[in-house]
Length: 208
Image: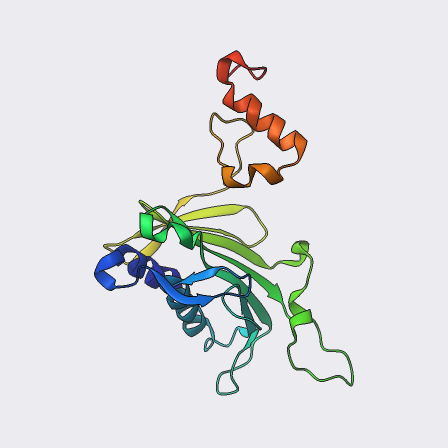
């Protein structure tokens, strides 16, 4: 529901007066876009009342967000970047929401049951679910609950996500690559060599 709302806001673009910066920075020191803040609020509002969550953490918030007492408390933790790639918003390039779900650690006997930031610092293998939603030419939601990866595409006429691909896998071989070239000066030598070989095409050592 949150991803559908964010998709709608993103698609409105300049018509919704949501482009440009908000005049603030996030915890990473990145300049926040108006849509960063809107998407963050949408995700909190959509998930705080359902009874599944104990707390949330976001790239756009300085500290964790504990579900208020007026809502039922759940056993899961939600982590998200509400709008990754938001520097692309104003030039109409794909952006997305990234999320992860963890189980709240069992409370230790005699200790306070309150959620802390430490509860979020779990190994990736302990994730209960994870995924992302891309707002591009189509809005696609990619999700795993630990048994394969599935992709859903937003049908705007129906207003619902429809399963369009099961058992998604990264191809073993491909003809494309995408990498942030502005960070080239920071790359390790093997990464730089690999990209250089890719750029040489058929004349290079990779032969394609």
